Image (tube, rainbow over the protein chains, first blue to last red):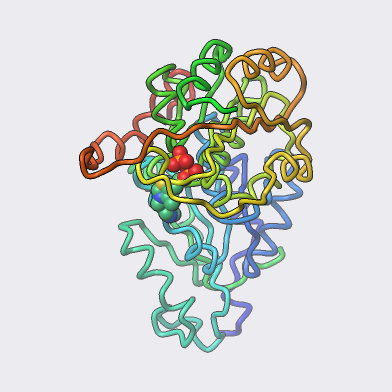
Length: 175
Length: 198
Ligand SMILES: Cc1ncc(C[n+]2csc(CCOP(=O)(O)OP(=O)(O)O)c2C)c(N)n1
């Protein structure tokens, strides 16, 4: 497979977000998800808030959710490690079904198609074990065929009233 | 001059109406006792979360009054939140910082960082519409009508006198179970009250 074969079109992810009623984003932006950031920021139906740190993206998303909006939180793998305590509080103790979009910054292309845990880079190979250690579901998007996992993440988060992580193993495409 | 957490929360109670109040730390204990309501949401155990929760509520419920009852060290932990509050500039938003210059108020009364930090200056620098330091319950009561009437976001730094710390004669109690479940329970109660449960 060529590297580009791993890209999920950002437009397809955007369509799932619409289908799931998502109308807000809080974020510290992610290098991997640029194409998606670009789309969501320019969607007039989306409240899009840049935050100074991931803890704030999570607590602000919780406030939005309680107030009636349907936010997602976008960050990169370093950001996830930056906000574990807020994730525990908001996504588990607080029972807020937030879906986090997390990008695999630093993933070497030679790891594509291989287990994330085999990556040479700590921030890539520890992300899934950390999320699973919190007892939260982890959905890795590896190829366009994985797109249904995005909707599944929303369904699981909403059914269990807990956070869920959608992990972008590769750049979503700009189409 | 200074006031206690309970005095400050007593005044806030008189003026809150149907405001949504996010709260944390020693202000949480005071507001819960003085002004219990399904419209209160504690950030616990979550240091620094009250301002983000309040901003999210203000974005989702722009016509509601939102009040944040923050700790001084808690705000320092998530000081960057002032940047977003300045950007969004919610009109019905009052950010109270319970400044006792301590952390673990009434428990250990430890010093906090930022002895030279001016919360009002930082808030104004971030784009808050107003900022003021208030030292007595009377002055707070006098300021409230205008804070509610004028467009925010407003920063109100309350100068708080902390209770005595624990000693050997007053041993630390176990933290009640409630404190570990209340964030979920209170967010559910607030959603019920707002009609946003799903
Ligand atoms: C992430 C994190 N680090 C440390 C603590 C321990 N802790 C609990 S309360 C507190 C100080 C809070 O101070 P402040 O916000 O000023 O509230 P006050 O005690 O003065 O009411 C600290 C450091 C914590 N709860 N969370």
